[in-house]
Amino acid sequence: MSGFYFGGSDSGGSRHSDSDDDNLPYPAPLPRSDFLKPNFSPAEYLSSLRNRHQTLEDLRSDLRARSQLLNKELLDLVNSNYQDFLTLGSSLHGGDEKVEEVRVGLMGFQREIEAVRKHVVDRSKEVDHLVQERAEVRAQVVVGRQLLEFESRTAELEEKLMVASTHKAATDIYGNNTASDSEDTSDEEDTSLMPVAKLRRHSEQYLSIKQLERSIGIEHPFVLAQQSRLMRCRNTMLLDLSTALKQTDRRTNYGQQRLLKIIGMYREMGEEKEAIKTIKEHKP
Image (cartoon, rainbow, N blue to C red; front, side, top):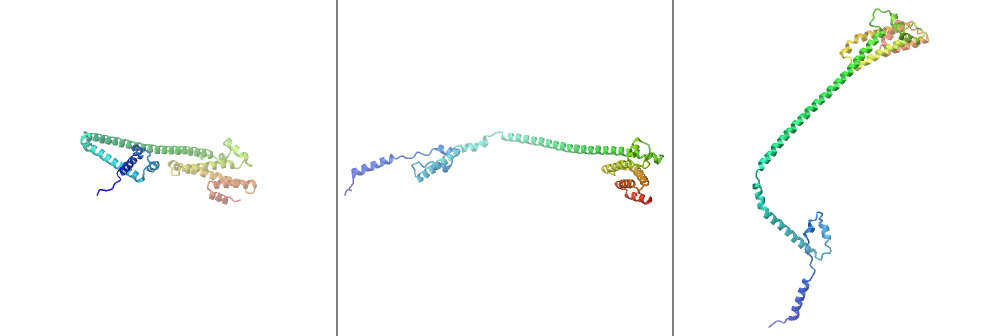
């Protein structure tokens, strides 16, 4: 009726087994400080637990329990400060006045910036106008110098051609009036002929005046007013070239060279038609 038990040995063996389980080296809990490191890496952290005598499932259980604990702590923290969060807005006094002061200050600062910007824009426009005005003044100075040079060269050419004196004899134009004229005839074989070198200088000066005229602009009022003077110089030079052409004996070698030089001056002055006309009128 009563069961058969191995009383002594069973009870003794059970107590011995429980004692052995209690003496096993259980792993210590994972310290929280390991998870607070700035350079925490889950993979590296798990690889550092290879000497921990714990199964993967137990490790998962520990981490899951720690996560639940952290969530509970966070919830407790929010609940403990929730009332403070709710009363924070009502505990602030005078905030609207401070915000209004800041807004008014910002508006004033914005107006000051706008005034400074407008001043800078106005100064920039003024500087641009002054720079443009300076450029115009410099251009006018250059034109003024060119006009003075134009007047000086024209007066000098008139003096050499003696166009201002209408009662001079033709011999005074290329005769013994100046020392330079005697020097011009030094390279001529016949001193009775009009010096080609002198005509050459006159034509070169006339061409320089025409080039300066183009640089200034033929439409300039001063240049327009001097056209009559230039026309007198041109007519006088053509008369001198015609006289020199008439004096040239084309049958000699010297005469042919002289003829080529005179025709070249006609060409440089753009008066080829006058040269042809003069040659036809005075064929030998």
